[in-house]
Amino acid sequence: MHLRRRPSGLALVGHATLAICLACTSSESPSKGTGGGSPAGAGGAPGAGGSTGTGGSTGTGGMTGAGGGMAGRGGAGGTPGTADAGTSGSPDGGTMTIAPSAGCGKPAGLTSGRASIDVSGKTREYILAVPNNYDQNHPYKLIFGWHPWGGSAQQTANMGYFGLSSVSNGQAILVAPEGQDFQDGGLGWGNANGEDIAFAHAVMDRFGAQLCIDQNRIFSTGFSFGAMFSFTLACTANSQQRAIAPMAGNTQTSGGCENSTRSVATLAFVGTNDSLLTVHRQAVQVFVQRDGCSTQTTTVTPSWCDGLASQFLPCTCVQYQGCKSGYPVVACEYNAGHQFAPNSGATLWNFFSQF
Image 1 (cartoon, helix red, strand yellow):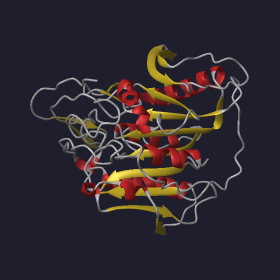
Image 2 (tube, one colour):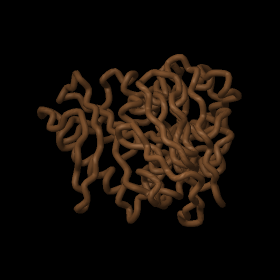
Image 3 (cartoon, helix red, strand yellow):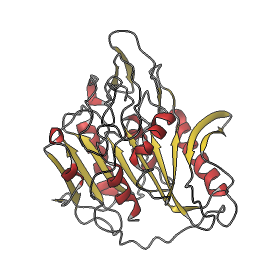
């Protein structure tokens, strides 16, 4: 998957009170499972690491302006990989029941592949992955993978839906939505007038009607702009998100954070050299509060950090204490800049599958 080559130099564009940097490069996603890959798009980084956990090289970090609103475009990179360990947080102690959708008990009305959907008169696209052994009577988890700025639905599909396709064992329906052009810098999730929130709900409604999903177990993960939108979607009162796993985001750039009290379990990743570190931490605190957690944390052992290559150390995953039963908040920070969380596929699945 090629990203458009931008002119030499940096072009700074404003977004609210934030300054956003575009840098110059192009990149191509390698085949699944290879370590690293081509250099990332500006400010982004390749999906570090394949199953060996060695990781790819980090792309050139984009500058950020006041407030550190968004790093540069996320480049296409290698598959996050699946060789990692747990970091699932405390087991789900909640009592949320299975909620079969209207599509349960009927032959699948959708098949894997790229498709389009009309949202308020605008055509939006996504790539769907339905399990090969699809059972019309089994309510599946539904997991969204939101691509970074300058990425695409194809990028997400090529990297195995953030490494989830190889570890979910046919127990989840995976979808890679495609963003829209954002300030002439590539596809992203600007969510103008809530249009990306509307897109997410249109997809959930379609899948609920034509596939068998568990409407109480819908999840999101994403990197950079995709993480920002994961946070923003989860902020909404009717998000339908059971848990999210954002990688380096904030709650401002995709339209802000709705003033809601909805609890959403959270597993968050960010590099300690990422220009978004401060705003990412602030976003995590939104869900620390909504999930009823205290500010005290304990180190998670074993954790995702245990399988990382030495270049990503030190690394720590902490779990906030006192959260509502079934709504853990786990925050992982590691030695890196702005990039996909390396070798995170199995960790994402361990976190989501506990619910």
